[in-house]
Image 1 (spheres, helix red, strand yellow):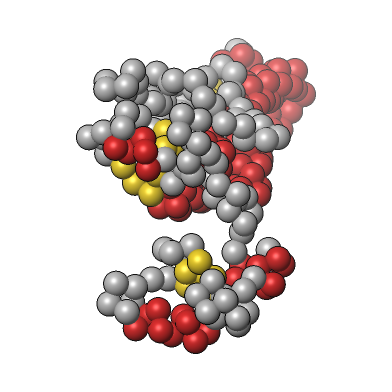
Image 2 (cartoon, one colour):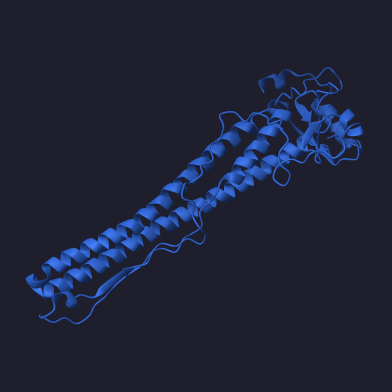
Length: 297
C-alpha cells in the first residue's frame, strides 16, 4: 500500500495522486479531484486516500484475455466485458467490486451473529451446570440428613443411594460438559474464520478473492450453533420410616435426562478453515452452490 503514495495524478500528470476514485479506478491530485466532483457525471464518485489503495493486479479472462470486472450472477463466475455481450448474453450481472463488498459484509454479519449466539449459549450452559450441581447437592444433603436421623441402622443404604445419585447425575453432567466442549469448538472455529476473514480483507480484489470469500461463506454456513437444551433436574421425595423395614425408610429420587430442542449429532462436525482459500473452479450442485448455465453450458 505504501507504493500508492508515489503515484502521479493521472489527469494533470504533474501533482501527486493522493486520492483514488473507486469508480474510475484512477489517481487524482486534490485539484483534479475537486474538478471531478463538480462534473454531473462524476459528482457522486467515491474517493479514498491513495495510501489505502490495495494494488489491483486484475485477473484475466481465460477466453478473451481481458480484465475480469464483472460477476455473472446466473453462472456465479467472474467474467470480462466481452463475456457480457458474448457467451453470457442476457444473464444477470453485477460489478466484481460490488460482489466482493457484498460477500464481505454478509460473511462478517453472519459470523458475528453466530459467535454472539454461541457465546450466549455458552453462558447458559455453564449456569445450567452450576444450578444442576446445586440441586444435586440439595438431594445429597436431604438423603444424608434423613440417614442421620435413623443412625447406624441405615448407614449402608445411605451410601448406596448417594452413590446412585452421583452416578446418574454424573452421566447428565457429562452430557452438559460435552455440549460445552462442542460450543467451545464452535467458538474456536468461529475465531479461526474471523481471522481468515481479516486476512482476506487485506487481499486484492480479484477473482481469487471472490472465490475465497465464497469458500468462507460456505464454511460459515457449516458452522452450527447448538440450541439451548432442557437442563436435567433432580429432586428427592421423602417418606415416613419404621425400624422394621429399613429399605422402606427411604424416599426416591429422580434425575430427568437432558433433552435438547433438536436431536443432537453423535459426533460434532467441526468447521476447519483451510490455510489458504483457494479458488474452486468445479461446478457446484444446484440448490446449494452454483448453477450450470443454460446458455453456455
